[in-house]
Image (cartoon, rainbow, N blue to C red; front, side, top):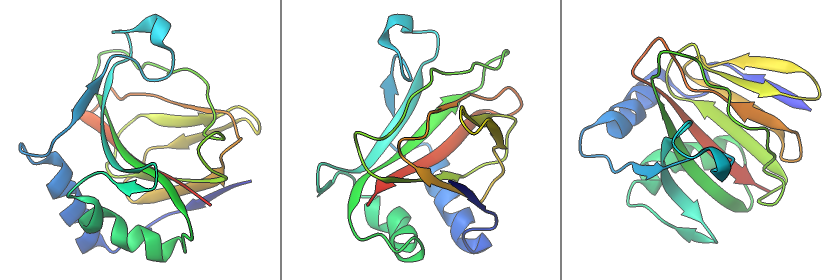
Length: 162
């Protein structure tokens, strides 16, 4: 089951979160591959882990996650991480994967507008990266991400929970 919720956050809050994560002092961490480490360097991205292994992992956790926790009615948070996929001249489709080892549910939130996508294998579905959209799905659904070619970066928030 895949549900799409547009205009998920109040516009003012979305603007505040975007300002925070795009500020020059926000700490992003380099990863040489998105899914498959056999293709290092061809699909690199940056992450910021807000929560993992039952612990807050970032001083930005409360500012970013408090509204999501309430709005999604999360009982047990498993992981929350921001993903930043840099612009390239060619759209790169990352490897297929599931989040099933982490949780039962996924909320994928798009922070900015761009021409990147999330693809779902079954059902075959392509979700556009529209700012302030939240896609809810079961963590065992096979999917993949892309970068973008029309803006500096594609930023998503991936929340895994029960």
